Figure 1: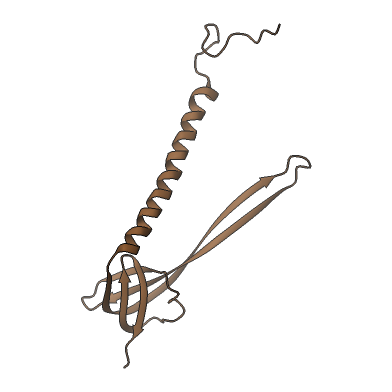
Figure 2 (figure 1 turned 90 degrees about the vertical axis):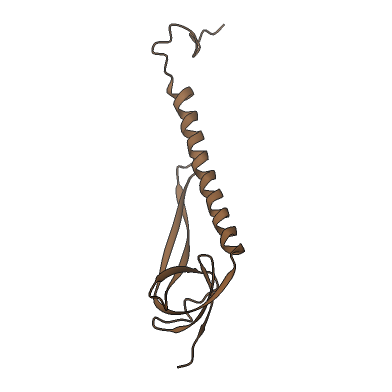
Length: 140
C-alpha cells in the first residue's frame, strides 16, 4: 500500500545517526535526573535542618537580606495563538549573626523574625542547622 522507505535501522537510511531517536531521549533522561536530583537535595536539606538539635547562643545581628526567586511559565493556546505568561515568586529572608568569638554565619529565617530584629540587636538566638528559629533581645 504505502511505502514510507526504509525504517530507522534499515540499511540505505543514509548516515546512521537519527537525532530524534538517539539524542532527544538522552537529553530528556538527563533533564529528568537533574530535576529529580534538585528535588531530592532540597528534601534532604529540609529534613536535615528540621532534625538538627536546637542550639541557643548569644549573638549580635550584623546584617539582614532578602532574596526574591521567581518562576515564569508561558502557556500557548493553539486555536487563536494567544499566549500568556504566569509567574510566581517567593521571598527568602536571611539574618547574619556574629558570635562572641568573632565568627559570622547567615541563617534562613523560617519563623518571621526578619521584621522583628534590627542590625545591632544582641541577644540569644535559637539555631536549628541553617535556620534561625527564635531571637530574644537582651536588655541593655
